[in-house]
Image (tube, each protein chain N blue to C red):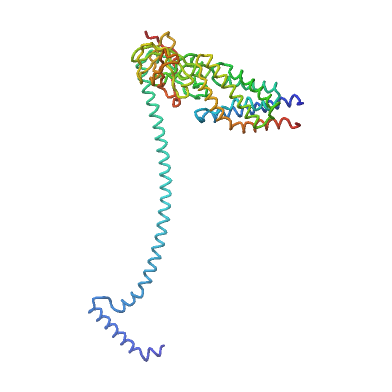
Length: 281
Length: 170
């Protein structure tokens, strides 16, 4: 090798100089890259594309993993936030219902001072327990001053039923549609008097009868029926329900009305027991 | 012939099984309405154990179930089930002693008798109160029987298990 350079070194240098000058001249006069650079880059181009693709693939994978992890964290946070919001909505609904009940009760207290001076709020702990009676069990009893025969209303002042049995901290009320319920009633529009009583045939459909109506009574569908208050056993003007239809009894001599109670017994949760009331004349 | 403590053990087990049924009635069945009625397991508790026992003891057990029912359920009269259940308990016991051996079929027939007697007594009380509703009452009794009758299988299995546990020598 040493001898080769000694013998041909000058020629090699000369050749290199000639090539360099030639390349310089070509690149000076050419608008594109030099042929040598062009050839080198043309050869390198596929390799460059390959390693760029591999690098991009790794970058994508890394980005995907980072995104997935971030999305999982975001999803968990959103789920938590959603659960909290659902809880808030549930609470708001319950509050709204309670608020509505309390507002109606407040109105009732202002309108009916005769019945609201001595009332006891009670929760329903059990709905009907047999198929032969329509009853509700309340969480208030003799310890709270509740007595047999007390009227029970909802927050709007509509009659729910009458207390039939009382224990220390519980009581049972028979709803308006129970066969044992019977009380004086009045048609609000006409002031006609009658007796509202439960009928087993109608009990399943949550209906009751208005009997003993005057012969000249002209009832219309939707007529409001309220308690008459006669005799002073029950407060007057508590809403019982509205007339659904008028029918003739079996004898054909007298008519009776079928009423739909204003109260939906199945959806009741809280009621108010009227422990005492002023008799309005 | 069972010894005294065995008799006590037997009736304590029957009472426990009956309490389980009453618990299921209060916690689950009370909240279920099928075909417009609530399944009513009390007549089954009065009748099915009676099919495994002699008439006297069966009648007394059914009487006790009736008293418990009247204490916990509202009724037209305060002693409704106390009057009806001993009768159906006696019928069920006589049925199993003379016609059908105690088992699922006997329980089924006894249950039908119990619902018939209960429904009939309800009808008579409504009629006596001037609010006769024979058709509606019969339909309620029929639906009540239909939705409750599948429960005769588990209740029979329960009381038969008690009977076998307490009559190992039979």
